[in-house]
Length: 322
Ligand code: ACK
Image (cartoon, rainbow, N blue to C red):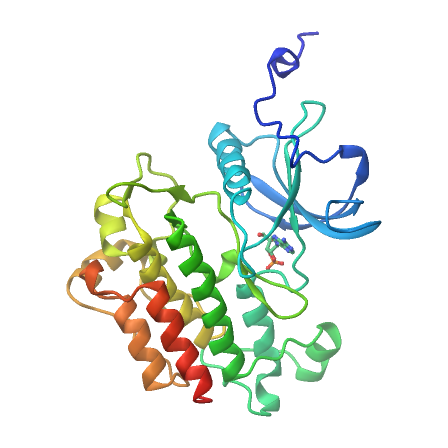
């Protein structure tokens, strides 16, 4: 048999500060699966910060994934080592030894992604109780059947503002560190047991310096409906293009996880945006919040608000009790 070439290479990913022994990780079920990656729920024994068993999430890549996917996960690992903020997902450790696949261990978020949280919250919709009205979903199933099958994911207009404010705070922190996320969307935000939003999925994140712009070289799968015009046209990514994506995320929040630009195919989007087309105000969205979204979608990136000023605006709205 041909020995695995990894057997003879030095493990440059090994970092004693973060390395966690595989023997102290008990993998449970798959909780998320993408094209090349997967996320598993696991129990960790004596992971730094928690004595005894604790529930964690383990990110890894599938066997048939290519070098890019492995590199993305590794860059996520290296990036997470240097960040520490209540609204950014916390790195707990990694298994990098060549006896097994690369595992990235991050904090477990009970409610999963914000997108799935929002979509599940629609089920409560018709029960009113000050809940946000459903603008996008069509639930034909019997309501009582649904509430038996799902746990409750209540969400109030105030929760929506709070979520937006938390994400903006996390993004302001990343922007301060000159980190550009490049894939900010509700699917990449996690919701913890105490209903705190954490920015996640840093695979595409890049450190930017000098001109503060990151030029993407290769053309992979791109989240077109979340992308700023300058990213679509010239592959330019900055904190200002993250702000554009944040505007789309606000729209996702208000519509409880609808797909942006309903009825518009991605091939037509760039031309429409250049002509000045923007999404309408969702029915249940305040004029003030829609104003904020629209500012995020300024054609001129320099006219978009910063995450700092977005945080202040959202904080003021929360204080006013909107
Ligand atoms: O909405 P979900 O159930 O929550 O589906 C996605 C899926 O994996 C792909 O990203 C879930 N997921 C990712 N990271 C975590 C985590 N740290 N804790 C809990 N669920 C996670 C996410």
